[in-house]
Length: 84
Image (cartoon, rainbow, N blue to C red; front, side):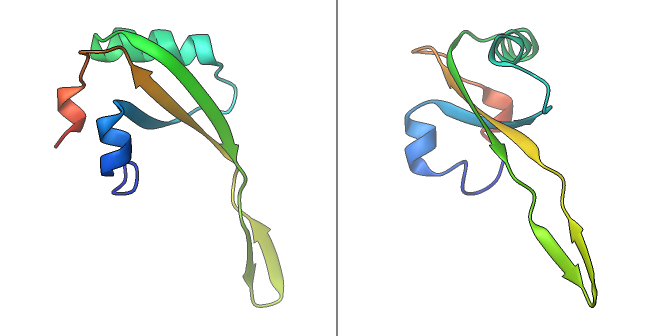
């Protein structure tokens, strides 16, 4: 959770952002969040964040790709441990 993902727009809409495995799919993410935090998930949206290309002098490298999941909880649900 970053400052940007904890902004007023996301918090008021009851959406949480997680970094998940590249091979995980929406049903797996939904069941994992429901079991781990004991909440009801309304929807899951995912996207793959492409790794940036970095240069170190004459050498070039690439950061790894990673997957981000936007998890919207059902009305009245709240994850207290992430509210800080």
